[in-house]
Structure formats: C-alpha cells, structure tokens
Length: 143
Image 1: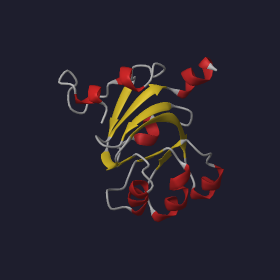
Image 2: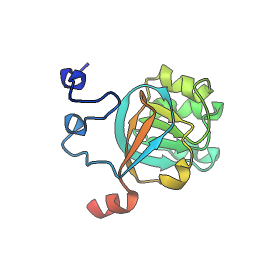
Image 3: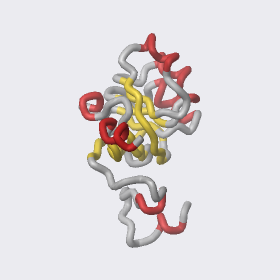
Image 4: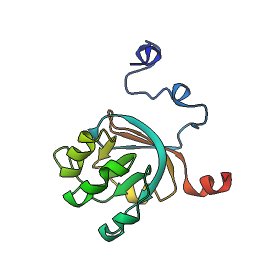
C-alpha cells in the first residue's frame, strides 16, 4: 500500500485525489453502492442499454449496466470498471469482476439517470463509491 494512503491525515474511505493523478479534478457528485470488486480506477463511462450492443464496447472503458447478470461475464476482461444499478456480491458478473481484478460497484440506485456515456468517473471498488469527475458535456468541451 502507498505510504501516503496510510497517513493519519487521510480518513478511512476518503480518496486522496492528489495522490492519484494531477489531471484528476475534484468530484462533482458521489454515488454509493455495494463494493463488489476492490480497486480504484479512473476513466470514461459507457452505458450498455441492450445486451446485443455488448460487442460494441471498446476496451478500457468503465461499463454501466442495469444488472450484473451472466451475460456480462464475457466482456469483463475487456473493461476497466463495472457499475450496475441492480445486482449484488454473488452475481455472476460481480464474481467475474473479482476474478479479473476489475473494480466494480453494484446496486447503485439511480445510476443510469445520474451517469451517462462519456462521463469521466473514479470508481472505488473497495468502498462502493463512484465519483463523477467530469460530466460528458464538459469532457467534450475539453477535447
């Protein structure tokens, strides 16, 4: 573990954003769910509205889906993080996320209303927290 993360100045469960990257802005929103697979990852989201579109998901994105059912399992090794509105620790995709060391937070109420394709987020799979860093509308303006 990074020595700075063990510092007494940092409260348990608080993300020390200054230690992760100079390019990570302070969060604009916080979503809470069930910690399904540990790890901290930052990246751009993509919302999966139909399982038929699963093959269109590009490698390295953070996947947002309604549920973490068995149909998601084949895509888990390809993604950077997994967020779902429904599901639990024992869901097949949650287990696959742990197997492939993909940070995952499940059971996030209102997830698909609050996060959208193109949003930049930080996923804390150990604490079950998702931080909205840059909404898609702002992310497009930065490019």
